[in-house]
Length: 216
View 1: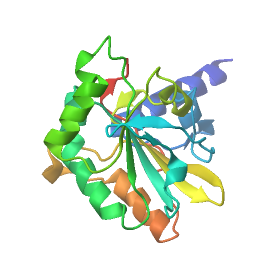
View 2: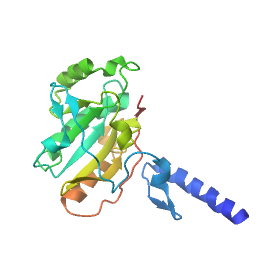
View 3: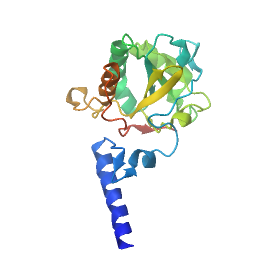
View 4: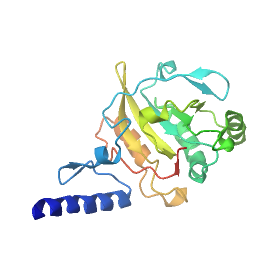
């Protein structure tokens, strides 16, 4: 009995260490840490269903609209969150770089506008114009899509790869390891995952801890 308790405690301690580092190793002492931390929504290897959400130009956008895409960079983000704001320029740069390589950014605002009026559809249009967004910025009206994904933060990234008719989740988590200063980033989690897919290599870190504002 004492041995079981010790092992359980050890697993919890190791899990805490892993979380603190920002990188989630999916196996610690045989425990599926990722499954423990993310109890709902998609996990790596799951197939993501398509959606149809309203873009800032008034048109409905679906993943299936991108016939030539190799996959998608789905990012749950918003207007008001300082973490999201800090990543806006990096998201723009990622879109410009990877859309030509087959991985467009699809940004989705998941927040309840009654709780956060700054995240209203009208303010999304304003913010996109101010920042010069050229990627889709979609409104999750009724908050139906983000729970399917299991997103909890803004920003929260889901990297999908097209495999035949399926959109398979290949990476979940953060864009990188320093939201405060892009010049001090040591680990480019999303770009590392993208480069691995483009080079037909294994993604080393399939889960990282998303750091940002809670979705409400």
